Length: 114
Ligand code: FES
Image (cartoon, rainbow, N blue to C red; front, side, top):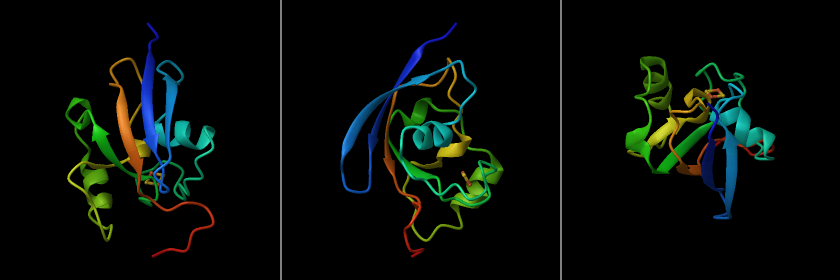
């Protein structure tokens, strides 16, 4: 069964956009955001090893599966995290994924590392 996931994205300039993500393509949220033109660095390609896909979940954090230990460990390396920080590459888009509002926090292409 495929259902659409509504994802509201707030970028670093506070620009908001509402996107509809497919639940049946086996994508993760990082891949989906990149496919929609958000230049997330994603140096590690989605292995939970770079943390440049850092996002803050504004709505429905509680409805997502818990982060893995690898994801926690990686989030821990960031200079600033939020109570609802996640790595976008570790959020699978499937029929169990809730609608989400997220804010992009990680490093983007062409941005100087802080
Ligand atoms: S893309 Fe590297 S941790 Fe998500």
